[in-house]
Length: 165
Length: 165
DNA sequence: TCCGCACTGGGCATCCTGCTCAGCGACCGC
DNA sequence: GCGGTCGCTGAGCAGGATGCCCAGTGCGGA
Image 1 (cartoon, rainbow over the protein chains, first blue to last red):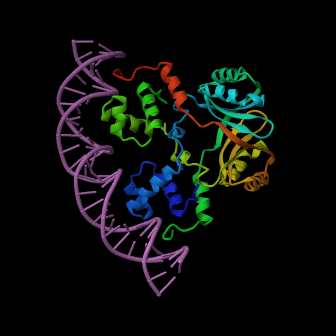
Image 2 (tube, protein in one colour; image 1 turned 90 degrees about the vertical axis):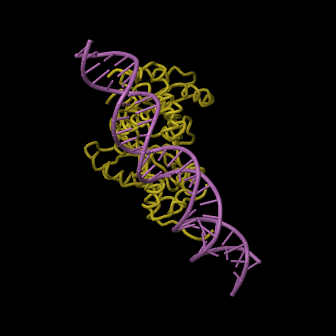
Image 3 (spheres, rainbow over the protein chains, first blue to last red; image 1 turned 120 degrees about the horizontal axis):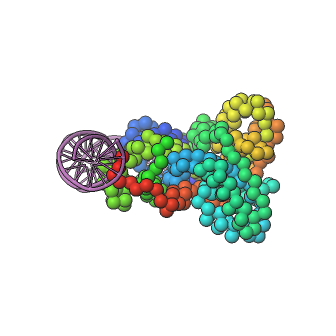
């Protein structure tokens, strides 16, 4: 994957500020020509810099205000089937295979405590699952953010965005 | 927060399929009038159903392909300062206050193993942090998804979208 | 029965989009 | 030093989308 240059990063920051900005507005904000912005956006899209829109849907709005992390210990030989089973539970929003004591960390969205208990049980009943420890997220201390990282890349100095090959 | 009706949910699914679709295209896909779609989108936006665009930026693209989860044990009295310190680390992408054995679960993005170690050390040096256990995410078994949950709400039957108050 | 609400379909001026083209400046390899 | 190549610019153009307005309609609740 190509390394993003300053122009790309500035574009990402601007997009984060005004996600629905038109190409013209973005060009104005960054003092670039409309053509350049358009070309960059196409390239960024093709390179897969933008993750699916799904990620922008609020669980709260869907009536699932509770977030919980479930640490799952499994028979590692059966990981494939277990993954499939987890995919079958819509409330399992995300799951990672981990190093360390637990094998799988699943992120779960629930309507309320009962609902969470139900989902927890459902995970426990999956064949090959040994144990599942649920931790409820009480506060989001740091809300998902990418811009600080992008800005650190900008400040840290990348190659300039003009001329050259 | 108002409960989303069938029309809203169908709109979310359609948007997930084609995030850059025009209002006209969405209206066509859902067999609604353009005016209705436009009004719904405005309302969904006002209600905060859409999370920030930042969430759609790929860490891989930013040169941070490694994801790690850091379980942090802290002096709970100092949680406020600790949160501020975590916010000061750009690589800390998200952090939750948890019930259970650990106090804080932080999600971290890193360039490579060394980088991860550096960030881990930086977290450890925060005043009030007792211990920090890092687990590296090796695979994303289930990529972030919301649509299955939305569809389960659709299938489960919500109130219809037309008429009434 | 009447009211209010949400959706519909039409219309309108303005702006954006997607595309093309020529020109220019900078850096590359030769 | 020189041509080649790449990225940015500014202009132009047809088609379409946007944002806004309004009147009409069907349904449920008061």
